[in-house]
Image (cartoon, rainbow, N blue to C red; front, side, top):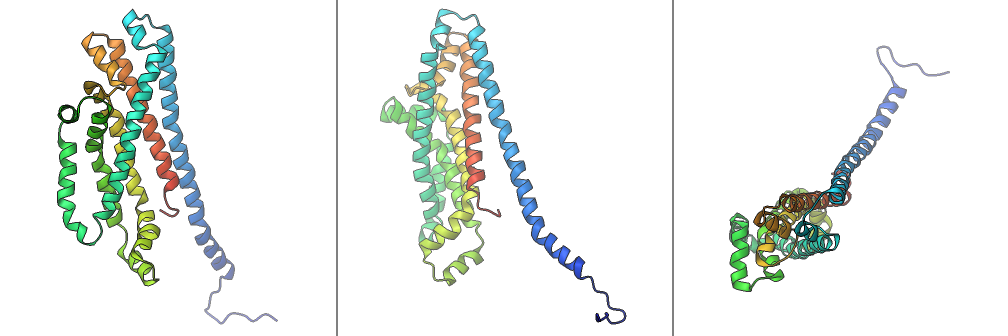
Length: 275
């Protein structure tokens, strides 16, 4: 015989089990749906970039261009300008990361916090100054060319990485840090295994912002013989050739969109699970 429930008591064993299963499985389904939606969103930007590149190639092949325009927009000259622009951006980006992230970490540690106002003031000054003025001033000091352009780009774009590194680390829950220390982890171990992984989304957002700034600002390197796609824009302005001006602007915009997309992909992949 099966024992009956006491009068007035209600028992829903199957419902309780089902509810418990739903509570366990719902977050998994929600995370999966969110992940799929994020990836679908990431597919839009590269499609737009590819359409833009295709439209430019078709226009270049069918447009009636003068001799000057044909030389500037020839595939050999154009590829050299794009490679120079990307190389300038890459070198400056590596230096920005090597400076901004370690310095941001250092400024959140112990006595170094007192230097934060001074360091952020210098970084703010670098970004607040007019970019073209910064390029020219550094060129008069260091000489014209690639090196001066890289230094100017680093000074102009280091602030987002530095600031976001500090904000990301300062936003980590102090209880998690204390828990790590309570488990016997050293300060360095807590930084590497607790703080930095949790701060990764904020840090990568700053890196992505810096990369987009680098691509756009690198067009000014042409004023100090730094190369890049800015030469097309300057030549188009000086000679009143709209095709060169618009070509340079469109190619820089497409590069910025492509690099921004790559940054978003890295940000999505590197984000710790559950955040």
